[in-house]
Length: 58
Image (cartoon, rainbow, N blue to C red; front, side):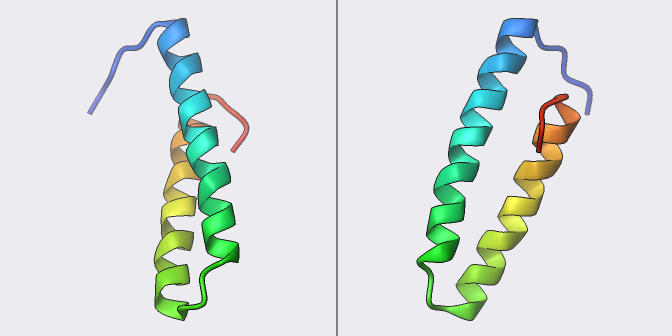
């Protein structure tokens, strides 16, 4: 899928993703369940990939 975004939209999306990533890292740190942690870490990887595709530091 191709998606065309303005610079302002890309910047906002990057900010939202970085915020989600920060909260996710805290959740990973506080999760006792190994399977839950693995799922959260998989999500972290996806977020990093999206941020990278948007040209941000992931």
